[in-house]
Image (tube, rainbow, N blue to C red; front, side, top):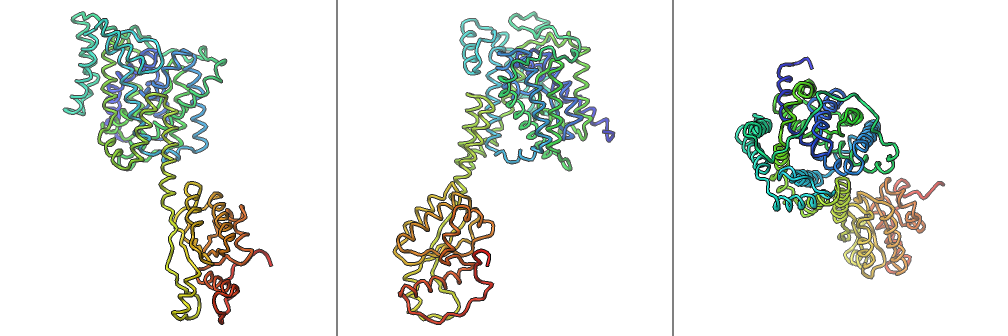
Length: 555
């Protein structure tokens, strides 16, 4: 933090200017008021900056977290938020101690993009009542609440509120394209507040009185009786904080050279932040991708930037609360509407949809589930569907191809003898995974083998074999044996033997000496079987070295 402090302090000031209207807006959207957003930005921002795993991360209230908190505030009030925050903080610290941060890399990109798209839509719909200047209608479903607000606006239009919110949003979006380095959010909010104060515009309700300082930490709102019913929301908060924070840290690493975050330490820092912020009247927090990006673009190189961002916001809380309280709610709604629009990366969405049909399905399904259900169900649905489609794709890579019969056992063969062996022996090479997702298709193909006397299965290229695959192989061997067809195998890998042995498939192959190390040995065994059946004339066979035989248990 001692390296280039001037540049990092200026970066922190820039981030604080950007974060102020967002913190106020997300606090209002959560239902606990603007002061809750500011307390979260100060307390969580400072603790995550010190104890987190990224040098560039900026934490505070976010739109995604607000989406989770709205129903909790509506049902349980401030006590529910405090309880959920404490439980989520403990869970995050537990995840850090279990070193679960590395598993973030397994979340598919379509799930993340669909999740982000859904959150952007929810944030935008949540702003409809304040943007239209109507009281928030009753209800928990954001679509229903937004529709009721529109109906009320049609009955009693409030053009001042809608003009302010649209004006702020347009200034932010146009300004970001024109001069990205200028924090147009604070410029637009100041301009909107000045218009209301100078011209005395009606229909623009202000934030209201703010406390001039942070409250003392307190557990007086802790709702112990609701611990059981708040467990699921706490899991949702912890999962969201982990997902968004690790994603934001990954984005920050990609925007810089030489920076690499520690995922487990980041979870630990976010856990401490979520333990502390609700004690000061705040809400659960997470890292904010937008504010982190501003921090990086402003030249931040150490934790001093994010720490100074929290300090600047603390000064505003203590010194400028009366001024902040005059900001119109409609202006904050405009800030969040613009933020929601900027969250949608059209290029990334277009690329993801065009990549594969499976990626498009996962993205759309996750986005719709985020909008209609809730964030936890959305992520779970996205992960389950993505996993199922991935398994289907992997299973489709498994092939069983008939290979040209080449009796390449020791010795030479005449054309007549070659033809005779090829008439009674068929060889198949199995490529790829043989597991539950595609094993039954393999059984169907193998059971339809033509009328031959010996089937040789070359298994050296089987990449994965689970219990289902082993059972399917055993069933196929038994069915072929009942038809009088002997099955020989070659090239079974050591890692596959346990699965085959556990279901009895290995014993079935070994009981009549039908498992071999190499294909030439399997062909030699097949010829011996045909000789015993009287289908080919007996001939002299070279003695196989002891090292080439498969041992069948202790001698």
